[in-house]
Image (cartoon, rainbow, N blue to C red; front, side, top):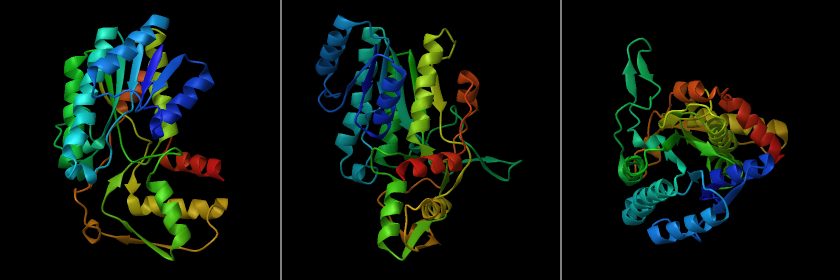
Length: 302
């Protein structure tokens, strides 16, 4: 049995749908089980074990409001550090392997300079973390807490996530493009747009590989869609593809700007590209290009 925690969120909903489609036994919980309460987690785990063996816990629960975290740091840390640690301990006590979802925000977004590229290279799993802001620090500390409390853990860091079941950049752009004649989008932050459906598939590929006897070392892995662009370029692709598919019926000019023109409580990473060689090798994954996944996602919305 697999226990999916945070099953109502963007990624959790995608994983739920895939589990149902593939006939994999699972149970899902969201806010009805308080992850900051060890007793609540232990009670639910015991209930699950009473009906079936608990072999996996997948944790998609997290505090993700990056700017609000600056004023709400206690709540952010309760979910992303204490909650994550409690889940890891519950998994360990239950004899279950854990998959924990993390983020590119554990890095500072300045990149690691590569002389051959004359610029930054994609972040690797063992690169030094250096989070900026309360959210990034909490997610990094959450990673450490998870690994300290359960050695049988897989951490998957991702970035620029979008999907059908929750607020995200694609939804925001489509709404603004329907309302405005011009949209300004920052052109000095670079990353890899990631469809939640594809990430959900990678999570299940990990489960299936291990359950099928594959040797996948515990530890940290990176997963995003392939390729990288700026937010401005991403917005431009959303606009042009949505117009072609009939999702937008009016013109809207997408214009570049700098991050300085949109001041925020937290400095957003300038470079969020993650190296995926480790997860490709471990699972034999063919990771889709970001533009192909965006096209499929928008076509499904039509």
